[in-house]
Image (cartoon, rainbow, N blue to C red):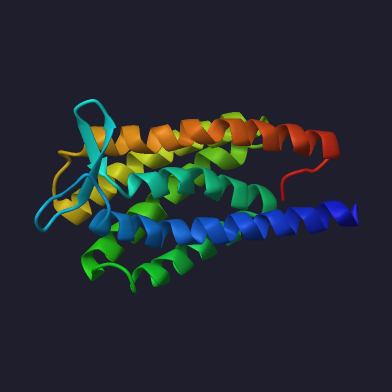
Length: 188
């Protein structure tokens, strides 16, 4: 049993660090990486033919799944700690307006995400993470775009880009769930 607890904590710490760094990474991407960078606006990437999104969707889509893994391994409180750490780190990489928009959007979306994830996690990691991520990505997109750019023009791309990242993570979630069952590892 001790090995399982150690493994859970080590994996949780890895997920926690990765999750905390997704916020500053997303803010950096928005200002520095894309196929086109708008004047006084975000850098954009294509997420489907003719559909663009701020490049930070790559990191935030992954963050939605990582948050669920942090909660699964370490518990709920650590998810909020990671959001706070990410916000502080973002202050060194992005404008105050962008940091505020991403932090508020992330805090609200993570709260909604956990309201969905927490009751579903015992029914299955994949169902819980998928459902909670979809709820979280919609809320995050609406709040972030409104606060950061005062417009929902990029909403379709925001939602689709984050959804792609969640879909890409599904095989990893299936593998983790299967391994947890084999080992008898329960969520924190």
